Length: 307
View 1 (cartoon, rainbow, N blue to C red):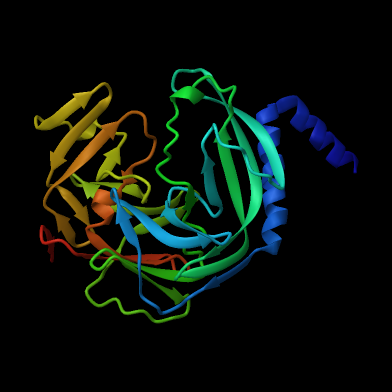
View 2: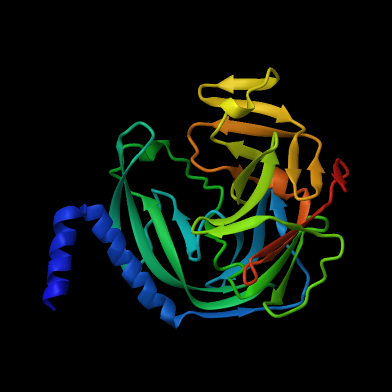
């Protein structure tokens, strides 16, 4: 008991109030997820929607139809974004978090936790834990935030699919098929891609000018590829320069034995990790098997050459 007391005193002394709030939220999430029921529909090919180069899944959320944004950048919770001028819903727990925006000014967000029931062609989740966020009215920049969010609800990589489910994400016919982890799926025409699975999600290894990078597989990023390192790839054919952003067209991109002839790479000092976005992802069909730690890819566009 004394050890716990010293631990809490240490947190109070050395952690900011914001960190303590986040730790408290994490404990609450852990308790709430014990009531969650997850069921998947296996072996059924169903369509998803591409809009503005993003993936959306028709879904009933608490008995209301929505288009659920599929964003592999986020984790295993449902995310609901509330416009700042809309009433914040009643939650199991609500806290106020202070952050710094790009202008080094303070922004304040309400963050809440609540349960949702989700039903789509691919899954049925009961008492699924969601995190609700909204910029507070006393935030410095709240008036600059658009009331028209690009999405209301988003789901991430650890829920769809989770580690016990294999996903066939097909852009050739805009469908998704789910398989149980022990199912022997067909890899005909696919190539095994070197990949990693980190705390930030799936990473696919690509060679850029013969240098290997692990690119985060990010369906929430609409561009082709982004890299933080520029000097190693500096060329004379930059398309444009915007502050610290360099855009370069290159034909020296290799994924496994699949060769991309062309593509725009964004070099930006504002990112810390290479990112693989939807303009790249959508040119392949993908088999994502997190249980076995394997990813397969098959090109679906003519300007990719298979050897």
